Length: 328
Image (cartoon, rainbow, N blue to C red; front, side, top):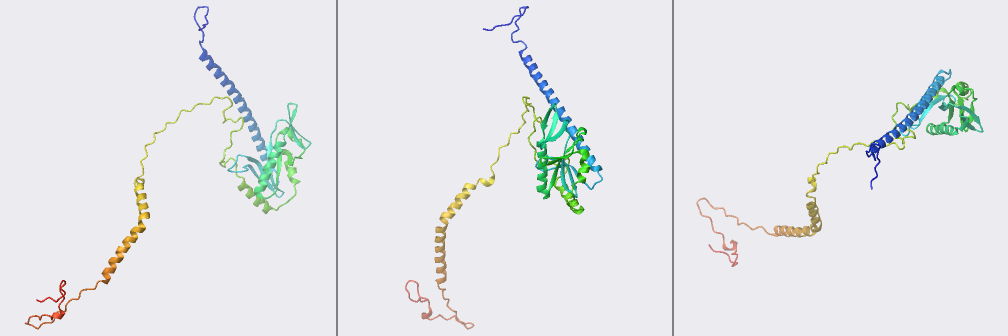
């Protein structure tokens, strides 16, 4: 039994517009998801922009120091394997240093061997960032076979009042305090050694912006290249495929069974046939060699104008049947 909804005008409206409303609901969800994706993408872009500005500011500071510093910026840690980059690599007479620049918006403090970032009346431990730059230093040290010192550099203006600290095995230094921090480092190598080591660093850790990375990691969470959860995937039209032409059997294989049969017959019957043929050949050769050559009668020289003389009966050849000499 079908129940119909009747309007005041008396017309049935049950089910009318259902498909259109479903489409409207679908596209509303798509719009909401797209809006959230847009906000997330804009937030990510802003963070990356602030990070790039911080790295540029630190690079400018390092280049302005009246010190013997050889600096590399934005280098690949493991070229051909990952996209992990090193913000700054510094080589001086005091050794090799890897610097990771941070541009956190919240205030920073240090206590209980922990680096804290304060935001929204809460504080968050950032020792994982210290462990990350410490891991960079370990990888570099294994490649260079020298000690590499890790630094976490604070680039934002409101971080510059923090005193340099040593936290969880990593030096935490505000950008404006880098010059005096490097001046306090003891000298461990001469200019020739530091120059040679700088060349090795330049080769081992190439420029991240010009080097092609072979491996490609899986899209990170929130990556713009990965479709968001619940986002309907756009179906692709199937590619037109050409029907493959029937393969022709190679001519070389057509006679393969016959060749195999001939080879098997030669293997099985070869030795007996060879022995039989050899015996026949041996008998024939023996008969030919052992058979005496027939003696030819030597003609008697005759005088001019006379008839040839008849050989005596003793020299005449015997008759093949009677065994007696034949008479003329």
